[in-house]
Amino acid sequence: MMILESTYAGMFAGTVTNLRKKAIELEDEIKPYFLAPFMTLPIPEEAPKEFPRLIASSPNNHSQMAISNDRISLSTRYDSEYWNNWDMCREYMDERVRLADEMVRLLGAKILFRGIVLRLCWEESEPVTLLEDKFLKCRGDYHDLALKLTKSTKDDIYKNIMLSSVRGYPNAPFDDRLPETFIGIEAMIDVNTRLASNYRRQSSLGALDLLMQLNTIVSLDILSLIKEGIWL
Image (cartoon, rainbow, N blue to C red; front, side, top):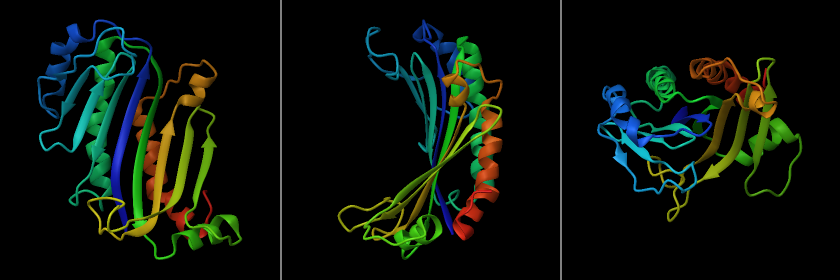
């Protein structure tokens, strides 16, 4: 059984100016999903532009939106009501990704690239052995193992799947929402338009396009990886 741990969506832009002056207008947009007003951090203007200036949290504190002078990021950590239901997670993301895109429009920012990351895991009694058999086709004396697979598409999308064995210990649990001795495999799925940015091209794809790509990987591709070691 897959456990959907968390998602991250990021919109990376050139430098955004007068961010604090635009905060009130932005607050009107976030109210259905986040608490307003923003928490304004006392960051000096000369600080690195990636440092968050504005932060908003959802009413139940599952999600946080952070806005800096060069990006908008949305982080969500799912609870047990959501983490076995991808459809619910996807719907939750869809609404908030649309919001983040609207924030970009209001800021007048030029997007350099976008990305969405999903972390999920599942129990596996011998995670290293499974990864060896499916991908390495040989055995080694490994305590843990991590692999990265990357595909690119003609429309300038990178699709990454990172698989790693994970294990928790009594004094160092893997995730405080799971049994402290959890053993399994974690997949981090990263879909982004950085390929276009690498070639100084402007991608026409929005965050919802990336979410559709992510949906295909979660619904179909990850299953073939687990069963066959093949990313179709």
